[in-house]
Amino acid sequence: MKLFLDTANTAQVAEIAAWGVLDGVTTNPSLVAKEGGDFKKTVLTMCKLVPNVSAQVTATTFEEMKKQAVEMSGWHKRVVVKVPMTVEGLKTLHYCRGKGIRTNTTLVFSVNQAILAAKAGANIISPFIGRLDDIGQDGMELIAEIMQAWSHYDFQTEVLVASTRHPRHIADAAMLGAHICTVPYDVFKKLPLHSLTDIGLQKFLKDWESVKKK
Ligand code: E4P
Image (cartoon, rainbow, N blue to C red; front, side, top):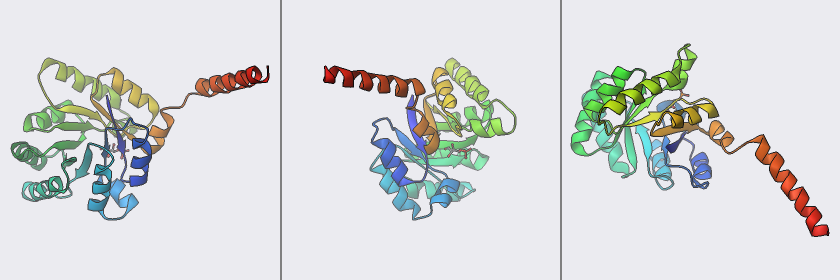
């Protein structure tokens, strides 16, 4: 499973990329607003660090989204254009597929939306599981349903588990065979940790000290 960092903070991307485990970054307008700065510059800095950087269009009509998709994809070959799951977005996905522009469909909340985005030509679909959990639905159940649907067909579209909230989401996504999981920085930092690893290491080091004394 590929691991992406869900952030618009370039220092966070540099830090996690140095671990050797990072396959990409997902940004969105809210994350960009939180960090401030020049969006194109941010994206270009990230493109030096990871092979995939999702940059979201902010227009809502096909004509305007198309223009933004062409512009953003021209910034760097590692840019993946993020397009919202709307009818205008579907037209944009179809257009981008024809032009060889890589796309990621954002704000997917149902199997039917996932199928439509895949058929329109999306390279990636992003079901938001945390936001479903927030309204009392089981977000991971949607991933299970999409992966089950995918098992019957030959969709080349990768399923990216988005809106993750805690480490268990990443493990569950992997066990369901999701292709990609995007993870917020604070959750990513928890992934290498286990109390038994810390306790075990302390004991090894302590025992080694006694060997050195002999
Ligand atoms: C994915 O690409 C989105 O940026 C992200 O996962 C949204 O997460 P949120 O629901 O925590 O805002």
